[in-house]
Image (cartoon, rainbow, N blue to C red; front, side, top):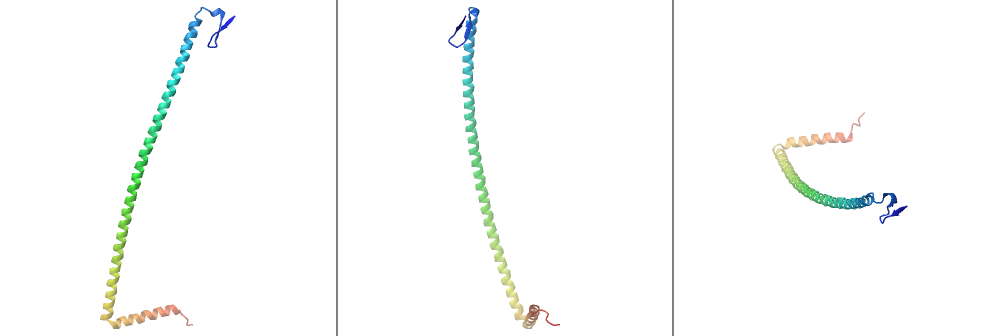
Length: 139
């Protein structure tokens, strides 16, 4: 006949007194130790997970701050380059204006010095322009 213990394990009557009770007690201790180890491992995993999340968030924040700083630097550099380009364009436009004004003055001076040559050039250029505009209509 078998008897049932409180932990649900039945022991045959034949094993009574042969160390079965000691073995059952040791099994209970092992079960408790395994449960304790499982809890420790679970807590360790939870702690490591929390630590990893914190580390990732910290690294992400640092990376974000670094990228924002680099973007700000790039914007400042682009702004400086645009300002330099505007200044260079203004200088070039001013130089072109000055060159055009000088050429105009030299042209006026040339016309004043040699009015007959200027009239001949104007007439010749006018004849060529008129000839090109009307085309060759002679057969």
